[in-house]
Image (spheres, rainbow, N blue to C red):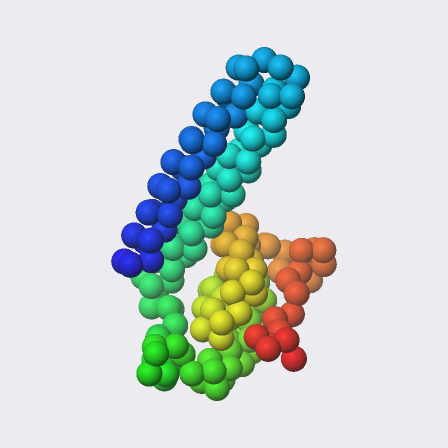
Length: 170
């Protein structure tokens, strides 16, 4: 719940900032000189990029939460039973061991969104956020795409996922 509150507060602050910056950009454009119009357009680009980025992240979070809810309903969510340090972080050795299990599961079923979802959780537990995000994006893409009725023999090699690697990059 704390993460949701933080996300919404951050999003609200960003939207306020986008409105404030956007209004300054419009003021510069209304001034009418070549220089202020140029600066005004440049200033308006920043909120547009920010709104796009916020929208894409919100969509990602909603889709990932939807997958989590579906996996929870199926009883397939990974159990959070890894040992933790006194500060609350997951112990690195335990995270690496859980990751190895999830990597094997994903290698055995590379077209299963559930395996990719669990791999994303394992990456996150191992504190490898970029790979966790990529694995979750793969899970979302596999969930959205219909299963291939022809089977794996006619699978498109261009869209085959990269082999998962260890969080330490080895």
